[in-house]
Length: 363
Image 1 (tube, helix red, strand yellow):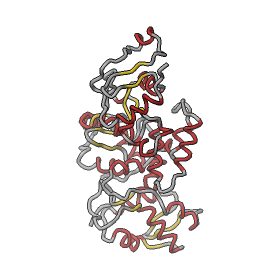
Image 2 (cartoon, rainbow, N blue to C red):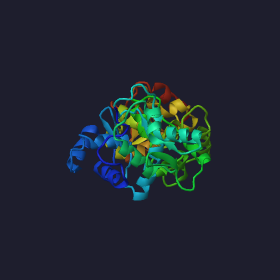
Image 3 (cartoon, rainbow, N blue to C red):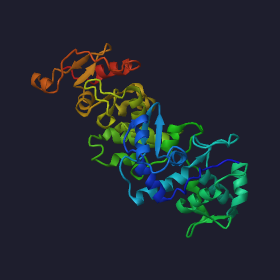
Image 4 (cartoon, rainbow, N blue to C red):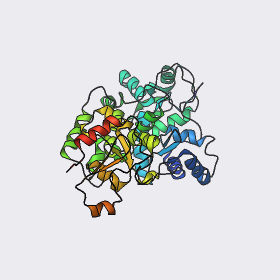
């Protein structure tokens, strides 16, 4: 017997909101994040609650770094919308479940919807569980309560799965094929499955001019093209689109790989911007996510690099455009040919060559 969802509390809105409050809402070292959690939590968080938080996709840890899902305090409506998306995509086995070793990862909600659609009638929950899990499961009540509370289409009552009020069987179709990872151990993909409300449909990130003030027509066209690429899951598309503003796995992996501005030495992630070396709009999808196609800068130097007023040689020396006046070079603390030892160049030589040849302003 294995548990598809851990038993701590039901993942109701107030419970999830409490977990979000306990978790830091900024990118930190894993050690610092855990210190903060232990100081905030009224219970032993890393005994059991952490497992529910991970299964809910509320945070992700990798190579000594901590990344939160929510970077601000969500409203009750936000949490409810998040959990609706979560129950639709929640899959087992996943990185935070034990057992189910004979199963390929699948969305529980999608599989139930498929069986209900095939039957075109209410179906028995117990028999469906046997078909899905191929063994007895624990914490059945937690799973049922989660489906009943957050599914927009199905309910389980008195051991019977049926449609919610005012729904018909054709309404099940959009919920049958949903994006999940085929690798039960892929923590990053699992984390990115569950989007917060402002990130729905991926490209909505880029409809807010305050968030992305320099979005060009070419960027809009490229983003639209990403959404139409075949053979990519929606999560993969979202990751590529998110990389446009230095978010998602591109930023996370860049922070791990070179989480310091080579010019200022600032290593506080709150002040660092993940910048593509070869611009996102003209990169391949692989290059858009490639950590070697990125550097971390504080805002001023990110702007200078992005617009081609500075670049770097292959021996870690800065090149300063002659289009910057001597007075402003002083104000910006820029001096041509200065050596920056913390600049991470390994694997980035080809991208920096492109930057020098195509973006740098020689005058």
